[in-house]
Image (tube, rainbow, N blue to C red; front, side, top):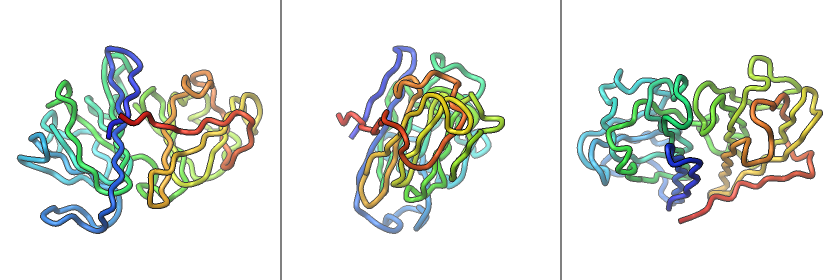
Length: 235
């Protein structure tokens, strides 16, 4: 099932969602028995050569896999990018990223327009969708630098007034504020139950009503009348 959230014709941002029920390593694969992983395949339909990745890969050419993938299988929340370093040096309208959310192993073809254009991948959060985390990203569509947050932060240090997008995992809501010390505009972000007691929410600041590059503090829990619940549009 696809969840599509396209912001402009130049860039396609797609959230892929798969709710599966299998546990453990799939038969016939080298998939880990636990933790996040993504298997890249050189052919569509999970055919051809493959590689299993369990950690951040900022440059797939190091693995001999730059611009080769046409399909994949994954567990957890993974973000795919068409440039190295998670599109850190590329604008949102000259590049693309895709997010895949899988409670259990899910397999997908990469859109044909993106075949042979994958150069870096990383997972979001701790890797365990039950862990309560909030990951902020410098760029739109989860591009660029990131800051992983696991507790209340009354100021964000180097990441203050930097976030353009955010992914939360775990059952807890999070409240973001436009000023330090939990002041200013406040918005409560509520993740979506994707099954098996696992929760995920993917948010763009423009979509939640927060100006870009203003988030300055964050608190676990819901402390705002402005509540945004992540609701992917299933297709």
